[in-house]
Image 1 (cartoon, rainbow, N blue to C red):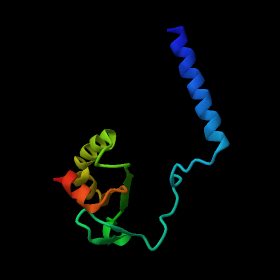
Image 2 (cartoon, rainbow, N blue to C red):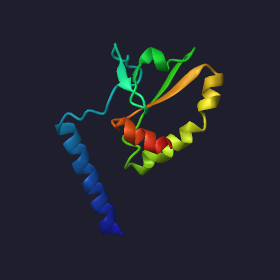
Image 3 (cartoon, rainbow, N blue to C red):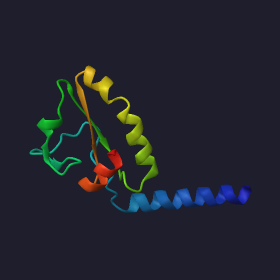
Image 4 (tube, rainbow, N blue to C red):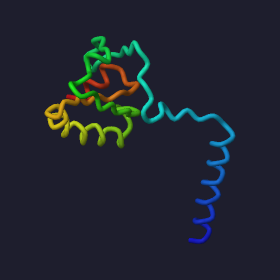
Length: 110
């Protein structure tokens, strides 16, 4: 047990050293503005703009790695899908952004 704790700490230390020695892109900062013009494809492959996904009060934008292979992302997408109607009643639109192709997203949504 003691050896396992040491290995975990050693790995964490090496990871933090590597992270501080290199520039790691962790995505946009909280509160960052969306670059305009924002263009993407929806799950059907149709072009979509930020204005298309903006509700009366704004958009809840969720970033996910992949609905194809990431089990954590899949569970998260299923969970947040349950609150879409509640958000719409409050004037918000929920949108998820990933690098998946429209075909992958349509298959996952089905």
